[in-house]
Length: 392
Ligand SMILES: [Zn+2]
Picture 1 (cartoon, rainbow, N blue to C red):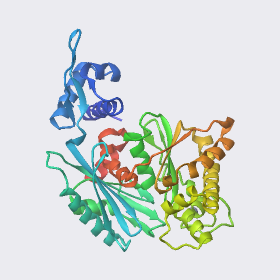
Picture 2 (picture 1 turned 45 degrees about the vertical axis):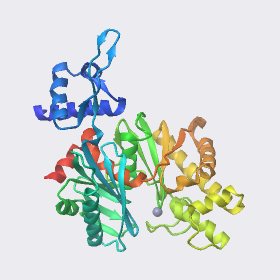
Picture 3 (picture 1 turned 90 degrees about the vertical axis):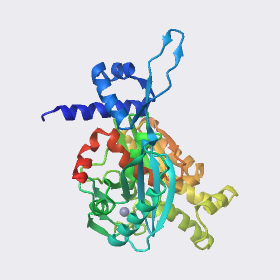
Picture 4 (picture 1 turned 120 degrees about the vertical axis):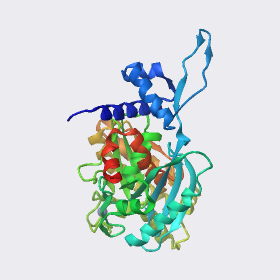
């Protein structure tokens, strides 16, 4: 591969931006010594980044030994991103800054999951969110769209989604034509893992696993800054590991998958059935009941935690993560679910060394994960191909 000057500059930009993202403000001299770049190269790249608005110079502090060097920091509000997460019946959308901190949220109803209806709803969401951008000079860096699916990220195509019955839908491309901004597409769990790596609980870990316990169950491992999506974007389908082949039918068409037993809706449904409750009884009601001593609710959460921990141990034994970050709807159950999960995990992990399970309890975890798809291009070495493919 021929490395020309432009490539070198792009790599240096990301090196510097990543250092400041991970470690916070640093002076030009510090950047040069940590990255190994020459002071001239640092000065060159930094002036570009300042001119583009991505970096700002902080306050100079007067130390005892005279003037201290000027610290540089990322200007996270210089650009904005939009994240869209596709659910059954609606699109959950956010406007975020470059650190995926949420500025505005929006839910757009979308009764039909036909591609054309989803495109209309997404276009509507983008134009509404763009009107919510604060009165600053910031501009839109791009749009991230996530859904539970196998995604061709380079072409912006949903190759297959069992939940929405999509087959080869080029939604990323089509949306990009409509909104006139770069669009990135990814599986929702992989996007969630990316957000945890860039700005979340995985930020300071070399190898960690992100586990999503929602309408589906999925996990994704980030190793040395790269989300391990597999050859075709199908890695981490923990929810489709067979828990009991005689079990209930899964959305993937097979029987007895883990998520057919213990996805968040499946857990709540088990409780409703046993207690003869209607659909108004949700996860919060179930948690409250369990806390008040409802033995049925407690037992279901215990079985779910044990089963998820049991299969999660296989992931740990294979990928050896430092921590497991858990997000999505079932996080609401808290330790009623996590305590049995931790117990069965440590029982089955090699040498009993189970990594810590760390819940991320923020709202908008899904849609801000989608927004990370748009901001990643700035930081990730890996993202170059995708950006180019969709921008051309
Ligand atoms: Zn399945």
